[in-house]
Image (tube, rainbow, N blue to C red; front, side, top):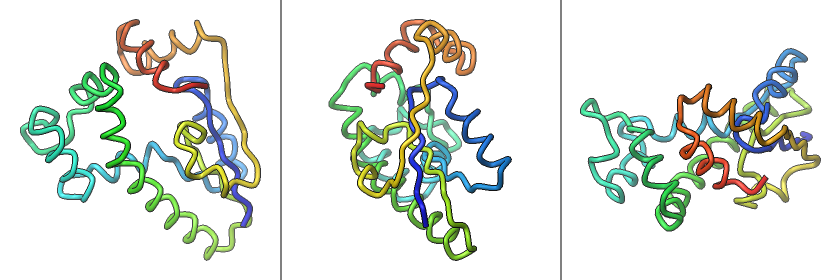
Length: 164
């Protein structure tokens, strides 16, 4: 099985590249999708986030309030690291299981969409090749503000959390 890491800053076009590979029949395992899965109510990461950050980062129905959590973690590096220590191992575990399933299904190539590939460093040794997606900074900022309905300040904080 040949693993290709796909990385790049938020709102640079990774999803477009992922979709091109999907259209060619190459499976794409998306870290962001895994991140959403692991914080579903009742899951291990969900419980750990609740213990660490409290009820203030959850909606009344028990779902994670991403906007509230984002405000905390992009303002405070220590809080972001706490969240990463909770979520990253769970994300990698899910991604590895998905890769095993793809391999057992006969896929020879797998794209691992890992926005924080280099920042986290954990998965780098397992990648046979790495594709880095990039775009102009002003376009990235505009896309992020439009796609996620964030202010310019919030968008810059999010971009700043990545070093690509």
